[in-house]
Amino acid sequence: MRGIKVGRVERYDIDSSNINRVRVDIRVDRDAPVSQNTQAIVRRNLVTGLARISLVTPGDPGPLLAAV
Image (cartoon, rainbow, N blue to C red):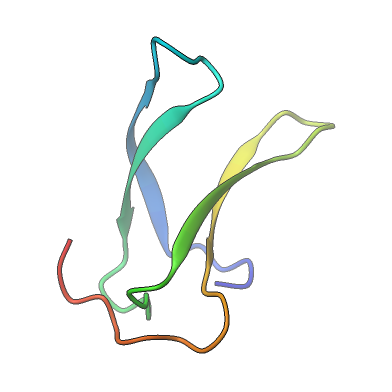
């Protein structure tokens, strides 16, 4: 969403079989235009160590996501 905060992390779990994998549940604002082909990508700042989730829609946006 180009750097605009549109939600928050609700919960996360580290995969016990692979500590490099994390399941993250997010809550996105109802008014945020999230398409069915939008992907959530975890990105980490190497200097500060802070992580953020970016919502990325590759190519043309598909139909809007209506349900989880």
